[in-house]
Amino acid sequence: MGLTLHHLETSRSQRILWLLEELELPYNLRLYQRDPATRLAPAELKQVHPLGKSPVITDGDTVVAESGAIIEYLVETYGAQAHGDLQHLEPARGTPEHRQCRFWMHYAEGSLMNWLVMKLVFDTIPRQPMPFFVRPIARALCGKVQHKLVMPNVQTALAFMDSHLAQHHWFAGEHMTMADFQMSFAVEAALTRGGDAQAWPHLLAYRQRMQARPAYQRALHKGGPVVMSA
Image 1 (cartoon, rainbow, N blue to C red):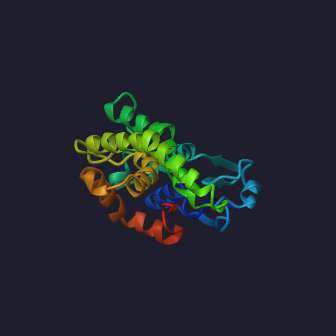
Image 2 (image 1 turned 90 degrees about the vertical axis):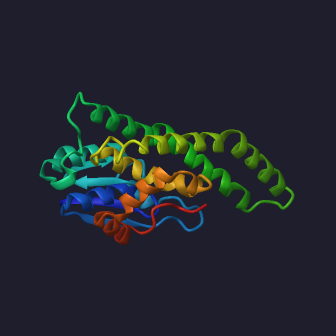
Image 3 (image 1 turned 30 degrees about the vertical axis):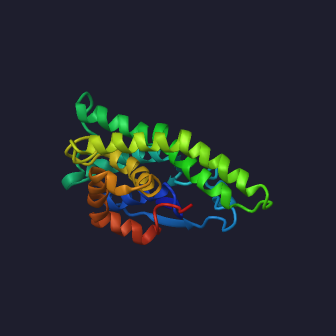
């Protein structure tokens, strides 16, 4: 069967699609649509992996889930054939670049995406069907959680990333690494959901560099929009 990416629309799977395009690997792309009512992944994804989540790749008999694990698998398995500015996908161990790469690989899902998902959830709740007399309560409650908890943490994350990118061309330094693919979805989501994006010029410049890459554009054409709107 070869290498297959099981890709869910508007999901973190987009970063795997981008990496595959950058590596110029032959692969199959299987597209899945979200349930129009719930916006959840379809049940058929459970036939690929018990969790029923995307991204998932299959490579022969090997099944790999979770973005970070997939990125590491692809780089360890196929990264040796990368050329040009992709030759540093995994920086040499023991170097500052390797430590930075490892940090951002974990930060994307370990810290940042938690707040971005909460932002999406609390944006969405007041617009769900509910009795008319409950809606003001839901709106007020969600607004308070956003103001007191979610947005301060999102703003802290944006400031942290913008400050880092003021001194680094890519997240681990001067060269693109695995961390840039892992962080790509989080950057898109943070700039979309974090308020005034113009407040973060270095993060915007980073996104512009990322989106200008031909492989990124090919992934966008094949996989569709990156971030799910509220």
